[in-house]
Image (cartoon, rainbow, N blue to C red; front, side):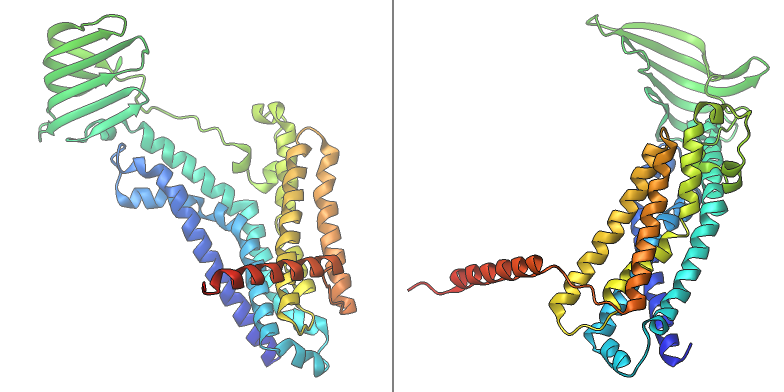
Length: 391
């Protein structure tokens, strides 16, 4: 790889990393906002929040990396074409495959990244996320004992504590129970404490009242108590049995599934479809890069033709990925449908390699060009009428 190849390699790799980090960061933020309750209602720290939500980053990179690659390749090729560098290289006798080598080198790196994430890192991150969320959401004592906050243990059940003293005594407690659609129960107490025994965990309340409001009745019934025990055992976090989903299985677990696994017995088609989708994951970067180069790597002299090529790259990449998605969905119940994604990938690779080897310049059909020209002229004429000063 000469100086030109190293320049293209650095530029493409830099553009890929920039797009990958940017898109991953934006999408991660939208996903992380869904778990913001870890800091609000669950009372966890910022570090725990970032640690838990950061575990989905490998999965995001797995999806975004091929897209970031095709954007980087298209950007670099479009820049080379706009600056007429491709025309100069072609005039100097540089073969198409020689120009493609630096792009291929970046593609190999991206493919290796995607393969490793698909086989191990994405499932491992999702597994850690499931275990961590289970621990956080079942840590009942740390969830309840958050003075000054309304803590939702589950849907329809909320706690509020005014103060927690150093001896563990809780002051100013309120329990709002709306789990029963026909009745709302509100418990108020001056003091309370959490006690654990062989029988379970209990919130022992003192000097308070229980208000039961039947939704069919107008007024609630109020019962005063000196001492009342609220059973927390059903919410306490004991040993948790974590059941991993199919997406959280490693590649080798999909390749050689445990025939005694209840989930495999229930959904063997899901295992098969997920396995084939993982196998094709490192192939997509090659297909995307070849498609981009086939449309944009040939020398062109008009900006309109290059703009059409960029649109064609977007369309072909979207069509290829859609074919893979549809094949995976239908392949759950129809194994023969899984062949569709392999056929689509083979056609993309074969067609792209043929176009690059022949040095073909893929031009839009004449009717598309004429239609685009007609639309452009119509828009220009309408704009001229709008901008013309009134007499």
